[in-house]
Image (cartoon, rainbow, N blue to C red; front, side, top):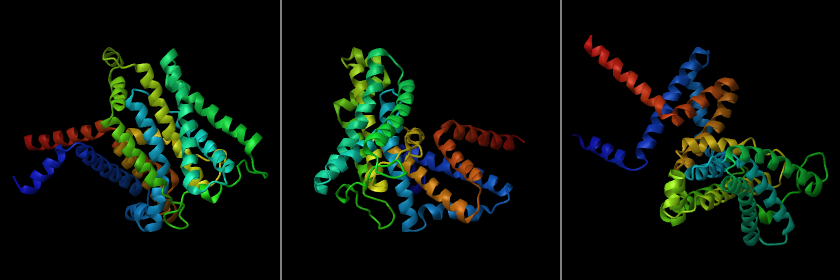
Length: 361
């Protein structure tokens, strides 16, 4: 066997590498199908994909925009993945994000006289704390009453968004036609990594949180207990683990991470709280978690994929004149193929059968 093949086979046996290879194959297949659709629609395939990749990674500015769009999805995707690990479907990230954003803005404005070394961690802590409290509510209801977290988190999304709007309009609104707070002080803002791009070191904070959550699940007894409850609550309880307690803990951690998404938006991008500022980061986080196989590092790659598709998609639309609908279909194909392993298996079996049929003839 050639040495190169041996190396590839050894890499395949490493944990996570096979998933990465699968995802790359899925992306290539999705792009090929998308190319067919673009071609039959009368557009230039090469021009379209050139602008997709150039818009996402072509230069420093485009790369910064990809990372900018990736950042909030790291937090919201990770929040959903944490819930999945414990057998919970936390789709309340949007409400938790809004609470985290408002809490961050209020703390930053209230303690504006503090220096950045205190005010930045304090503001982040406020966002995580309030997001965690909002996440604890459906966790407690699930643990104590059996209320399904899908229903409660959906309702709490609406309540969270509307409640933060109510509080803003009645207590924290800056004079003017727009429903927004005053600008937070400079000391509470995250520093831009590249001037005029709004890309801040929030991206590194996201990676740091991923490392923490990864260590939590792999190296701590709490992480083991959370996953045990997710695998089999009855067996976990038989082993002395209290599932109710773990459910609440999981939702607190999940809500805190989602709250950080709101914090980084306020401190790094908006510099204030604005009503309806999120385009649905909490909901997109569900797809990010699924694409990332609910693994912390998988979430990072999935969020990067979403960020690249969004940034590159805008370039496709502007410069290759690809209609928004067609661009959305291409993006959807990539997500569909990566998220649905069965599709690749089906295509592989069809390919094998076609080869077998050819030989028999």
